[in-house]
Length: 246
Image 1 (cartoon, rainbow, N blue to C red):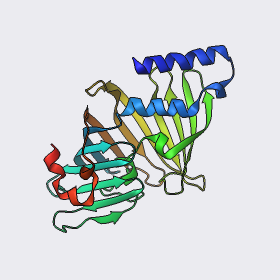
Image 2: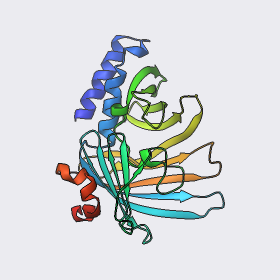
Image 3: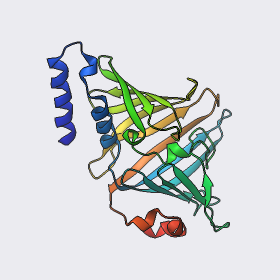
Image 4: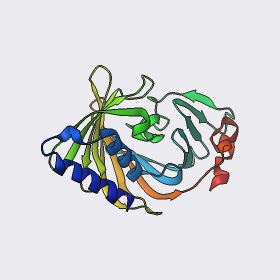
């Protein structure tokens, strides 16, 4: 109901100002996109599939927990070789815990702990409005095109171009650019379905990149449940114990 009301408000605003695409409050629209994609605090299961040019595939399954705007942790459940690994994000800072090493190590947003086209910031993604401001909104008929500018230089992508479906207020695709203007990758959202607890969103995310021709990565979202967590869950000390949350 909340999503519907906001969409109607946006629609009325457009009707009142025909041809005035910038009359849409871009940052409010982006916040609604975020709210439709995921609750502020939740737990979730995902599968990530890396596909190489020759068709070979490697799959990973994660359990993920998020709290508030900037804390997220992901536990590897499979394959067996990766089971027990944990990646943690607090704001712009990220760490990886490997059971055999026994000590968290720092990682960066542009690295990838799983290989493939998704990097760490894609896997531990915060809400878009936390990291980006809307610089422009372009009315494209059935869709809006949002130009997003990173709030700080610590964000993985300097600029995003997001296409949003007006009917569902869900992203269809996102182009990710470096500060030089180079296209780094494109994210394609599809297969909108009810993932539980009232969350209706795209269940599939596919990414490709001109920097990795022939390679693709696919993320499949299975279950999302709203849940509150103690602050200690998102700490270096708790990384070996994340499996206790399940």
